[in-house]
Length: 102
Image 1 (cartoon, rainbow, N blue to C red):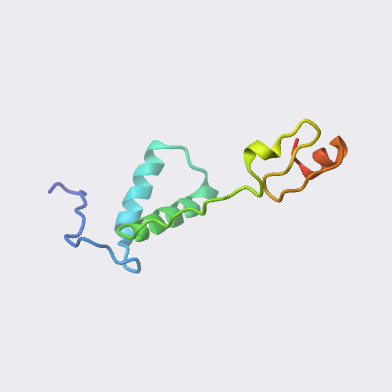
Image 2 (cartoon, helix red, strand yellow):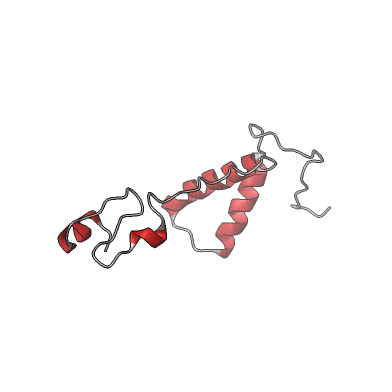
């Protein structure tokens, strides 16, 4: 192993509470050397890298699947448009633009 080279621990799972701060510092330091990062963004970068390292070995959380209030086929009619989020059916074009459909 060369000087300054880091080797990951031999464990198969990293405990979320025990993230090596030296590993976080090395990753952030390498990123900052190759990218332009503002001084105000460094703390956010450190936090996100630390959080990502803590999530290693955990199963990913499934994303919530959104279902429309009405089917897409039924949402567009010749006389009106129905909002897929809430099922709102405005009576005229003014209601459509106010509700944010257009």
